[in-house]
Structure formats: structure tokens, C-alpha cells
Amino acid sequence: MLLTAIVVGRPLLAQDILGLDAVATPQLRVLDNASRPEPWGQVRIEERVIIRISPSPPDARQRLQALQPRNSAANAYREVNHDGCVRVGNIVGVQPTTDNRLLLFMANRNVLAASLERGCDARAYYSGFYLDQSNDGRLCVDRDRLHSRAGSSCSLDTMRRLVPTDE
Image (cartoon, rainbow, N blue to C red; front, side):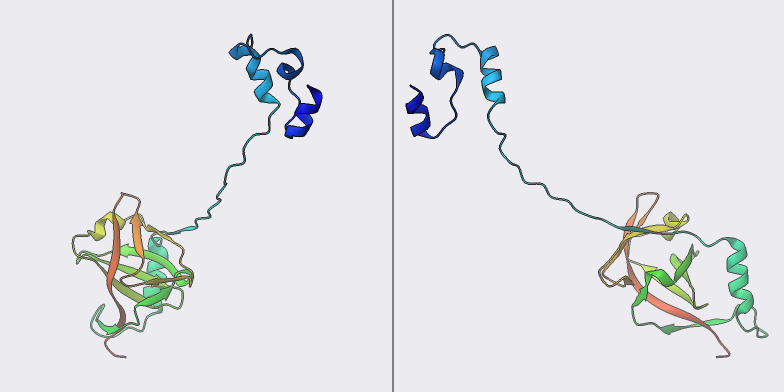
């Protein structure tokens, strides 16, 4: 019987020697099964980086606005086209506006007005937003989705830079 087990190429089991196949209970088979190697499974590890953009503190907004040149008309700004993407690392704060847009305060002292897609409410982003990190590290119109802490998920429709009217 020992030669049969070696020729077959499987490990020698207790039932081969003792002839316990007929009397083996499920409890005894547990020990037998424990000696067998476990099948390998596939493991997949994924990494997800989520970036949080917080609202800028009021004093930071006031400092940014104080650095802008003053003119006779208070807060007179015009909008100019923007290329549609910004580096996420350059965004230092965000603030929703009453006209359903988000003001993005940039590290270079620029302010961008970002319009959300139709059906989205900018007020949901009062406490900032999250976004998944893209390969290029940029936030782009019609590509990336902003996730609010309130549960909304929207993409940007347009992005325009606000400049003082005297520039």
C-alpha cells in the first residue's frame, strides 16, 4: 500500500495505512484536510488618493483681496477665459457664491470662478470638497468630479479668472 501512494504522487494519508475510509467521520476528515495545502487566491491591492480642498478662512480671503489693486469702483471685476485646468496644489481655498459658482482662491493670488454642471447646487460645497487625484495633478472642466461633504457630486462646467476692471 505504501508503494501505491508514492507512485500515485500524493501524500500518504492515515486512511491509506489504516484503511479508515469506510469509518472516517467528518470530524476525522477535518484533520486529514488540514494537512492538505490551501489553494492560492488572487490578491489585488488598490491605492486611492483623495484630496480635500477646505474653505479658506475669512482672514485669508481678506488678505488675498487686500493684495488686489484698488480702484474707485468697489469690487469691480471682469471675467476672462481660463484654459480649463488648474493644478490642485495651487488651490488654497474655496467659497460658494450666491450665483451658484465656486470661487477658487489660488496660491498665486488669482481668483477663479468655477461654474458647476446643471442641476448642482454650489451651497453644498460650503465646507469645501474632495476630489480623486488625477494622473496629471490637475482639476479640469468636464473631467473631474467634486464631491461635497454633504454628498453631492458634480463636475465643473466652466472656469473663468476674475481680474480687476482696471487691468
